[in-house]
Image (cartoon, rainbow, N blue to C red; front, side, top):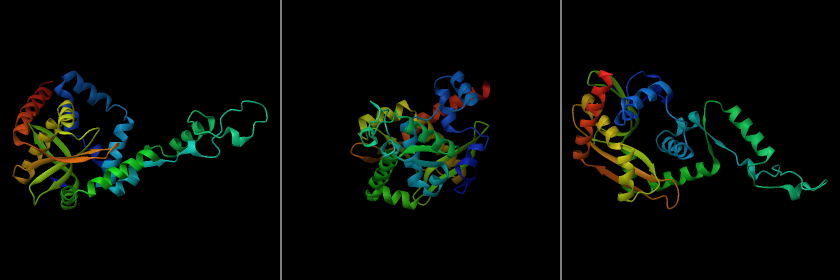
Length: 261
């Protein structure tokens, strides 16, 4: 089954194995068990930025549901440091510090008012927008995004285990699927290290087989890697079939161990 109509919140509730969970088994079955039991670790600022840019590009309406942008409370004229002497004028106490009582109070109130949303800062939001603009400025990337179904949910079965996947981009006519990845450096040597250390090959091989099960064909794979800071450079990286073939062996190995455990 393939559909692009399932909201993220509903997808998360579907009780099936997914590649982001299964990949923990590359380390050990203990690591996989702990992830299933305890859930994912708290998002870092970099992870929140990556998720925000991802949503802004692929699901702008979904961004409004899942994210909110925190105002720059530290830049408010009401942001005052403690007085250095009695009667010190407010204009001399104005500060951009985030250590003030005012800033902490406003942030706490904002978080309380948005309990179910991922919060990113205004600067982070602006960086996400710049990153998206840099993708639209590249004709091949823009064409791929425009021609593809976005945030596509796929159900299937691997080694007898019911599975799910959520593809960033699926271009059925072009026989291609693609993933959007944020990174510090898009240079092939630097991104190559990240690609292997985060086991992107494992996840992409998982996706490839799910697509094959549903569409009866083996699709090509690409990655849009995007810097979220600095030059906001990006690259469209094809993933060789041999890389995914090798990773698929690991997917089967880990899934078989998971079933045995």
